[in-house]
Image (tube, rainbow, N blue to C red):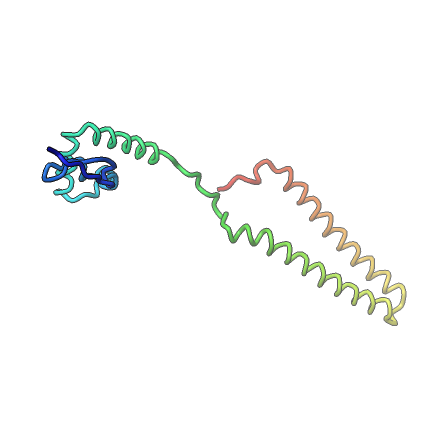
Length: 162
């Protein structure tokens, strides 16, 4: 007469005594390690003999082989070069803050220069000539920036990396 004991590792009822089937001692982790070639020679022989005598273990190993094959074929896309989390933080925070601080500082400096310029005792023709030079340089600078921005937006090769 056989008494039945529950073996949670094997997931079912097993006969008691010395008649424990070999496949009951081979758990899922051992099968995965067998598939990955991580077992010692003794453990490997044990699994191979269990596979030879148990269709259930063969079926389970076939499922793991399919999982292993499918998962090893998965490829994650490589992140674009130069793209990191810190690069994105820099683009989203660093550059805008830099432009903002530069614009505020340039505005304050320009306000001070204009104040000094207007309150100075220099003749009007010198003020007009200086104003013409400064305005001309600023217009040239603005037009170059504008042309570069338009060219950059319409450049079909801007995302191509070497």
